[in-house]
Image (cartoon, rainbow, N blue to C red; front, side, top):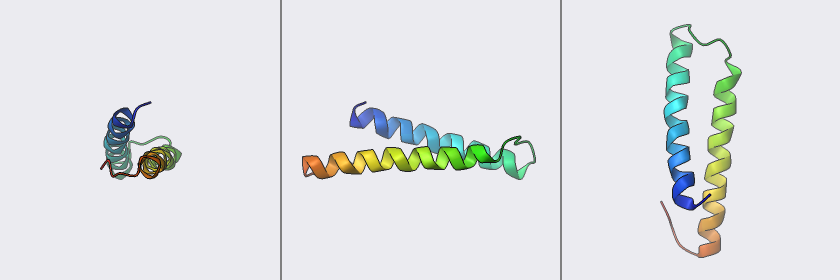
Length: 61
């Protein structure tokens, strides 16, 4: 994936995390572990983006 695609994916996951937290607060979330998984996915993507920034020697975000 390109850096732009990774940034887009991270934004999508942040929106999904918001929805999961909202559903948790309203008692509609069946699997609370899904919040943990989405947070880890976001962290993985941010790590990849940062590694690429350091390799290129510039800031993307």
